[in-house]
Each structure stands twice: as structure tokens, then as C-alpha cells.
Image (cartoon, rainbow, N blue to C red; front, side, top):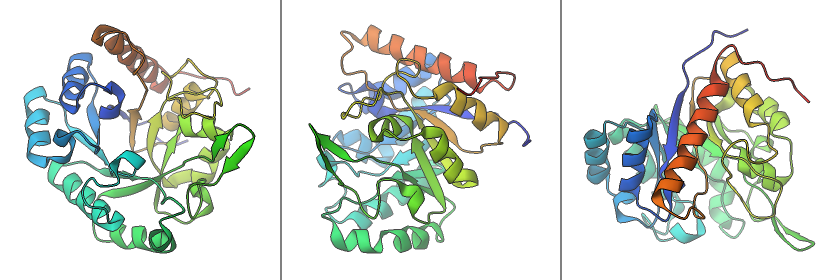
Length: 270
């Protein structure tokens, strides 16, 4: 058995949406998170390295990861060229002291990018100490139809990457086993997006413990296998009726995560 490590627990700045990136730093500091993962998106502050550095210093909250702008709503953030986006994410991570860049596999309509993606990510990873951790996605569903939106694969374990990010809301949406995916990732698991889900066609990102994903068991396994990455709470709080309710959700998520990362927690496998 690997030596247990103290795994850092970070807050994704996306978790406070529709509030701002600045609010995420404030909440992370007040609630006692170990750091933040910056989701680079339409909020100008999330795109500004100097502004992010000032927020980090002011709140005493380190930036542990940078999520490259891979979403549909960020197609024009940091250029329309996907490789430029990744290079800028790498540069931001290096300047901000973040250890990881999270990246999604390409959309299928990004044909040239998709053809070059696996090789290109390896090439970039060879040029830096920053981890490029490619994240599992899911098929898009509408009623009884399924669309494969990502290439080469939404299940990133079918391709060869140096590091992976596992997202448990995405495993729920894909209706696939998170524990089996964890096994396939093995020691290439570099990063975790912790959230919950119930298998809806919508990517739910519930507070851990409110869905049917094995969040507790995944955390327990991380502790026992010597995982050396970060666990990031990436939860959806858009339905919160107030900032106080949002903060309560994020406090609950942090307490759940810390409790199940404790080395003496044993969760029986169903």
C-alpha cells in the first residue's frame, strides 16, 4: 500500500457562478480551502494573470490549477485557435505557480485539432513541469438520441495521455463506472474534479453525497494509493437563492471531501 499523502482540496472558480472569479477567491479563503482552480472563461478577471495573482495574494489562497477555456461559451477566449488557448493556459499556470492545466478533448467539429490532439498534448507536456491532465467527458443526449460530441473519445482512457483528470459528474452523465475508469487511469490519474450526479443527460455537478456516484470511495482510494494531485470541488450552485446558501453548499462539499480523505476512513465497496 502506498504511503498516505495530504491531498490538497481546491475550489473551482466555476463553483460560485453566476458570482465572479473574485468571489471564488474570497469564499475559498473564508471556508478554508487549500487553493483554487481558475476556470478561464468570459469573466475578464479569469483571463488576467496579474489580476489573479493579486487576488491570490490578497486572500492568501494559492492557485493550484488552471482550467483551459474549452467550453462552447469560451470559443473566443484567449484566441479562437485551440493550441493558442493551451499555450496561454500553460503560461498562466507557470506564472501563477499552478501545477496542472485541465483540458477537455476536442469537439468533433474541430477536425484538425482532434487529429493532432494526443500527439500535441504529449509534445506540450514534454516542454514544461506543468501537468496537462485530460478530462473525461460524456456523450450528448437528447431524448432517445445520443451524439458523440468529442474526439478522439469522450472516454479519454481509450487514448494515450500522460495525465488524466477524472470528473465524477461526467461519469454520471456518461452512465459509466467511475471506479472502473479510475482503475483504467491507474497511476496516470493526475487531477480530480469532485462532484456528484444521478445519471441525468444534463451535466449536474451536484454537491458530493447528493447523487449516486461513489465519491466517498474514490476519495478513500486516493488516500490509499498515494495520489499526488489535487481534488477540486467543481459543483453547480446556480440554484442557490443567496450568497449565504451558496457558501453553505461549498462548506458542505469541503467537509465531505476532507472527511473522506482521512486515512482511517474505510468505505465498503457495493
